[in-house]
Amino acid sequence: MPQAFFESVSVVDELLRNGSNFAEMDFATRDCYRHAIEDLSRGSAHTEIEVAERTLHRAKRARTDPRNDEQYPEDRQSDRGYYLIAQGRQDLEDELGFHVPWRRRLLRLYVRAAVPGYLGTIVVLTAIILALPLMHAREMGLSAKYLALLAVLAAVPASDVATAFLNRAVTDLLGPRTLARLELRDGVPEELRTIVAVPTLLTSKDAIKEHIDRLEVHYLANPAGDLRFALLSDWIDAPTESLQGDDELLAVAVVGMASLNRRHGPPPGGGDRFFLFHRKRVWNECEQKWMGWERKRGKLHELNQLLRGSKATTFIAVGGRPLEAIPGVRYVITLDADTRLPRDTAARLVGTMAHLLNRPKFSTEEGRVVDGYSVVQPRITPSLAADREGSLFQEIFSGPRGIDPYASAVSDVYQDLFREGSYTGKGIYEIDSFEAALAGKTKENTLLSHDLFEGIFARVALATDIELFDEFPSHYEAAAARH
Image: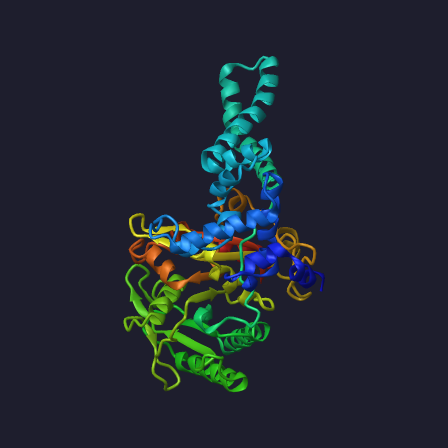
């Protein structure tokens, strides 16, 4: 392959591989490092080899420097990419005497003051857009009272136009910001053990069988490495603690998961590959009914607690087996029941989380993740609907659907400008930092739509070059119910 041949003869590539995990990164990340060295060489009086050597010297010095910078952990500074594409780039540029072009300097200033710059630009553009019709109306002889009324009524649509224009300009100028990633050629290793968790309700036997079949499809698309797969189930809300038929539904789920384990065998780390974590109903005073504690948010929170050895969850033993935690799980990939996990996507998500530049740093003083990311949110694309499932509403409002074979990454204003994304509840998170960031943030029965709230404290990255597929509501009533 041309890529392999190029890397085999590249002196810069050989330097970067020496004494590091550079070879374990995917080609896009390695190429990004090399392009950064090319750029630094062109803008300074140093050759690419000299730039690479100075980068290596800085990384080596970070590993041995007893003065540990509290803002960025030592392992982050020991990665070559810290000085090429991350926070250490400015210091390396100063050392090399790098000349920053004026356009890039302006963009950096704008990104550095992203929040006031973004909001201020929207205000200025809105004022300019409003000024044109107001000046025209004034020439027509409208009084000041009617001009003020017109300005108030036109402010919202004018700000929408300004925001759309600015968002397009930002994405065109900055371009897509991809995340560094480990390749994980042999799948997810044991030290990065991950569980794919699908929260759901046990509503009918047919629905349960469909959930189990889809979980099997997730495994068949991502069979390599130490991946576990689990359904996190509740019974439906009820006026009593138990309903007739509860045990029959649970039995269907237990039999289905046991069948998957017999058919596909254990993962490399041993134990079961497929799990059913089912919760009992508890009384909710606010809702005045028996239900799963805190619904979906409660499922994931209690799963995190269970995986860390807690005995105080509402999960119950099923299938005649004691409730046991899966040891050594580091990440959770959470999907909705109708989400589709494409081939090898799980390993790409884990590889992104595991890269040194993306690892989260939790601040106990601020009570949140201040650097790196606890959550990686992939791009969500509506799936192609079958003929019997499609509708005119779905065609109009779902947007572009299916796989785009030409797009490896797309632009997003939040990730490109603010270096953070928005969490929509489907993605991967690191258990310990995620739980630490959300500890004590909410009381019971105060939060239903939890994803955006969690992303504020856990810090989210949007990986636009990783894609999940989700079903778009086929009818207006279903879409309205979601909102």
